[in-house]
Length: 353
Image 1 (tube, rainbow, N blue to C red):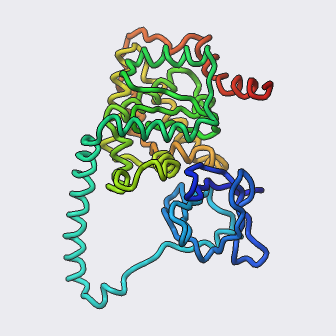
Image 2: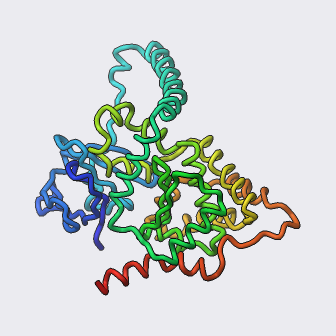
Image 3: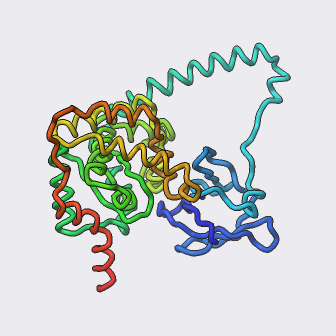
């Protein structure tokens, strides 16, 4: 079975999805398909770029911006050659344990203060025009997978109107099997078709969309990028690594405060639109349960890595349901069908052409 990775070559900013294969000498690997440079590349030149329960990403020595990210845990014939995260500690022995602990405590306090206080301030100082340009560039990088039909666009617009979509916010549907949605800078919101197809009702999509609109309103996406890239985001020219920024937002883990704020925003919008929050609670419960089923990790990793599940989130939406209220569906059956078939209809139209 092929092992595919997300890949950025550090030149074009375009995200590719080639297969990764070990070379005959086992010290190198190749990338095949989707227009990627085949290599070979040395496993020894890989540098760990991030390791979590749902992600393993690596850069390449001497190639700024070059990146591969495994969509699933790599197979043993590849994993055995991947570099392990670096460990540090020898300097502590030379400096002294307690003295080192004191210095680290001070640095940690400063880092926490910097992380918590400075990025939100910088995010709010960035002009809207700059943020909007960044969002358009990132969305443009996904343009080849965009889904659009007159009926689907009308259905999406009707839902956004019910959720009191603010001026300057644009919602896109993108063809991809991943269960995810993302709020990009500049009011750009992306719903992936995998999420729409996995939803049991339009009310579930409405809850997720309301959550992403909350991230937009609070400028959480911009803040997340500043936390990850610092001022280089602006000083280095953000259009040089637009693909990397999009990938970073897809894998961003917002703080509990940001997630709770987006949930509160979604519940407020659902309540104002007379859409029941209960289906969104059911969606969270179902995703958390499906994550425990073998074989579902690759399908769910995107949503679960960027929107970690918790029983408190499910309970928060369930508790916001008002007894005796006659809620109305987020969409009519015809609108829901139009939204669910947007990507298949777009693909069929492209085939005919």
